Length: 106
Image 1 (cartoon, helix red, strand yellow):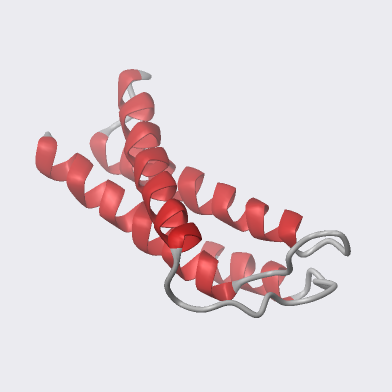
Image 2 (cartoon, rainbow, N blue to C red; image 1 turned 135 degrees about the horizontal axis):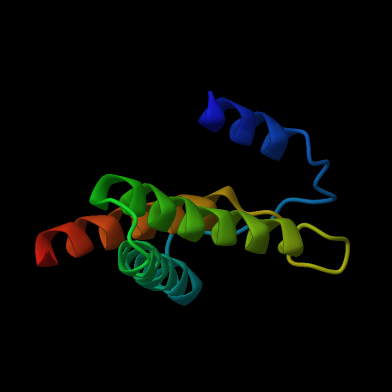
């Protein structure tokens, strides 16, 4: 249910324009790496706060994905480069990779 509401809210944001970008490039690697680090850091921080391992994983993933979505919303303003679903896909891939690496390191 939460994810459905998130998806609907993103579809109804009224982005002013979309980016015309490719699937590869330096900015895609930056999206991936930043999201991976943010996810792992969010997981670790939540666990240090006494939150269970499962819940801290959810916090880390949602922290990273929400920052990626916020970045794309910022880009979608009239003066920005435009909303990029490709960037957002790389954000999600990085967040899940960061989660997996964090889990393996525990």
